[in-house]
Image (cartoon, rainbow, N blue to C red; front, side):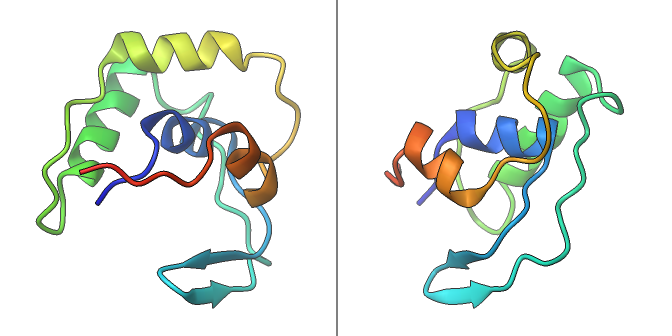
Length: 97
């Protein structure tokens, strides 16, 4: 099962900070996930995310550079890290096959 592609792109672009729960396990979130907006171009980010989404036995669609660009452009004025609450509000936790 996979979560929102858009949410994943946003996390990698602008980072994540705050406590989260993954598969019932709580993580305090005191160390932020570093933003990569200025480190990876759209093609590089799409390649990394496609790999991650297909690791560990998952079967996911390809993340395209065009999709990354769309999200990057739409969030260009984002300041600071995302919080788990902010992302879940924007992308409710719906898992997909």
